[in-house]
Length: 128
Length: 128
DNA sequence: GTACGTGCAAATGATTTGCGTTAAG
DNA sequence: CTTAACGCAAATCATTTGCACGTAC
Image (cartoon, rainbow over all chains, first blue to last red; front, side, top):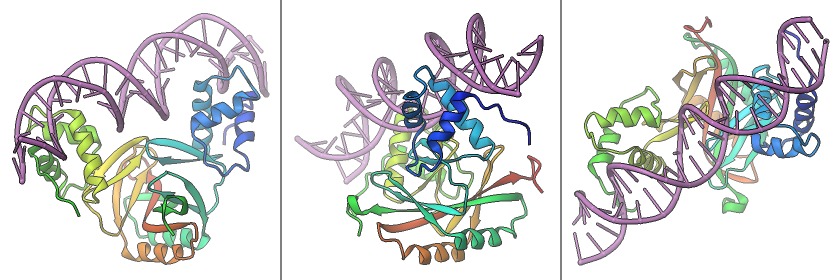
């Protein structure tokens, strides 16, 4: 693993994402970090989000055409409202293990991780 | 279920997607259908892909910021190469049922469907 | 006939890139 | 120092929209 340069910008982005389970978009990260580093550019935010998810330090989820980011790399999945796009986490080591076990049969690819998305309608939008 | 107007454009799009498991992007659908209907516009393709997935006639998968479409609505999942973005289907009714069973516990959302993505490195890109 | 669908071009939103400048180690 | 990261503005992509015209039923 190569060394990582900890610039102020990178540190603030990580700091904002740390313990943040609201699944912010790149734009939301930009607006939040800007409060600390007023001169940060959107390009830097994008570059860092890509860099950090490439390193496996944060995770990317794609919902309705826009990427969202989160710190949690553990065995968890997503509940996504088809109507409003809201995302909630769904922790289940059990499900991850079940899926990984099944994927051992796969021949054409070396599987490294798995993620299950549950689609439905949230309470606010009329479900349940 | 309301009635559907079967325009030539819509029929050709469906026809191209039928039995097509290559997960084409909207642009690829456009280029394919254009061979039959040279005057079709990209907007029409987008409108129809949205319309058809809204009706549950086709399915949408979002990979690396772009939507991809497929006809298969059955219990299946995706193997996605993190390097080249290639998608392969992974059929497993077992996994779908396991996930749905787990999701019965969820209180904040009425779950309708589930989809598991497996991320890894494909043979071509150096995996296995 | 009329509501819905289409084609075109322009608009929007998300993300990326080129490049001269700055700062981390 | 020197190399990776930044900031900015322009570029690129995917997708959506407004609107006049066309067509399925």
